[in-house]
Image (cartoon, rainbow, N blue to C red; front, side):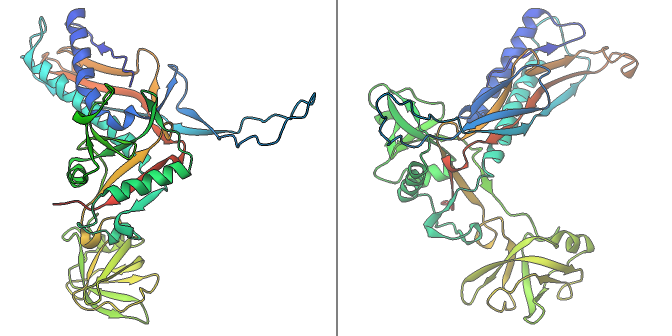
Length: 405
């Protein structure tokens, strides 16, 4: 990300100190920008509006018709799609007391901008990560059919990587290039890397040849995929079904009305929040899991509250069966995502100009009557406009899988 920073002050900081804190913010932000690093960059001029348009070009088919002598062929028009994304502002700040010394590099302010830089990078990285994980191309490990079926043992393997690479090649995903060699990029967390590194075909960075340029965070490669590790890779956890319980338990079931009695207490607030939720019921006896949407929910103490499903499950739940969120793994388990993609699969925004990415410092006394005794200062950061967008949905594959605890 091209971060042009400015430290905004009303008084008190020398230009040397300003430059120092600018660099401090950037230094601590950049290591966090893992997902953002690989997107197609789109720069928007200052005052260029509140949205940005990315251009997606469709690949030309092979031109297999011979050209007749002396006859100019019809040619082909560019098949371009414009993808518009809204720009949004992000930022945060901290406040301090009047004990700050402004004449030199201050330890408190130094550490403050270090923390703010880390937060800024983390923020923009999470925004990019969450947007690109909204793609439709998903592969569930171990041939499972849905996220809610995935168990801890359904870990990331070399076979899953081969399947994803095959999908990308079938979809003609454009690869990145390095030393004249094509490759795809995978973003992976440490738990998933632990499972994958057990594969004998895994190639560590230390074993690379031909003096390859190594990406920051790169840990190795497999089947033409370069793996970049970050603890901020996407995870899918459960959203609790009530304030008191992450999962619920079946007490009774009436098949004719599809009403599931709940053993735990459901408050009025819990019941209202359950309507429209997609839940899973796990029948322990047959080890069967089915998902259905909640049509109605009624509050009540243990055994008196219930939910009504929109559709039948294909089996009759029994007392003791678990009810859990459909957006997490089996029996409320956390699921990891390893996303593999080609070049230009998604785009990110850098706003060109002096207000791209600002450090903002307000010294004591700058608030006027809001700080009558010159006691408070604030330090913060602001991204004037940022977003990300999927450009080629089929040029990325999201592998959802369990991991070794």
